[in-house]
Image 1 (spheres, one colour):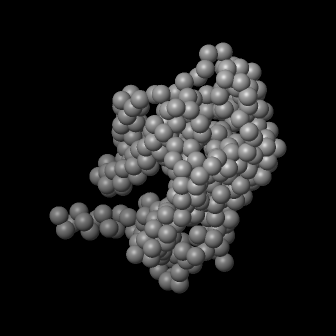
Image 2: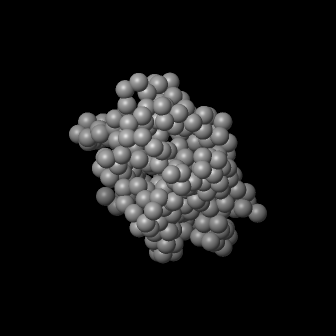
Image 3: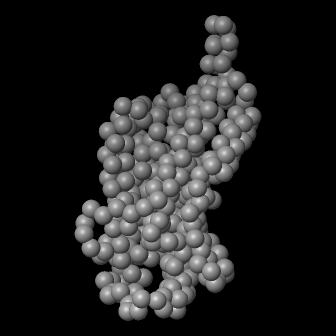
Length: 248
Length: 74
């Protein structure tokens, strides 16, 4: 069955155009589902954090003029931000899939998409989240925003570099030690490298005293949940659609 | 040596179906990466740590998304 696939029909079933369009469309679908998580689980925590911020901003008097109202931030602003993020991640995901498909052992479209999504989630969300988790309003000193932003994007870069490194090492090792051992060894190396990097990178995060721990925890879980939903949609829906298109 | 190479080839008959050649992917990869990064920058960081456009409208408009997507906001 498999050898039949390899010899028959050299026609390209998969074009870059189709993959990119599919990636961006699935990114929008994933963003829509992530928005549901944001509204149910995330926004109440953002609201609680803003209330805390306002209750404790007694000094210097006078509220800053509201440039964008809370109602717009929660609705149109959030939809735009998450939607644009979904399209961008979806497009980049499609490119990563194109590189991975046919080059990760004998994995077919569905399994490749699921694996690329899992690795993408670990690289872009997992690694940065473990060191610099999402913070609600009122957490984090505005004076350190420059440094924190650089550290955050630096950690995303480290996540991508170490995941790509682990995949390259794994592919090199697989013919020599077998697939199971190759995956185990590269996963252990990945964890060790990141554990060391977590230890040597600075942690400037400042939670103001009295900030409710419950709010912080729930906010972070909501943020993580949005990313899980986005990446799971990419992995599963993109794979299903690609498999279906290839079978036609 | 030729023998091991041969046996490896026959042990892995065909890794997977029809890959897309790398040279066909690269131009798209460059384009998507650049555009994607610009979009993510505007959602995640503009008018925060760095400002290309003056004011705070972009920051305030994307405020909730920025916090919830995990970017440092302020």
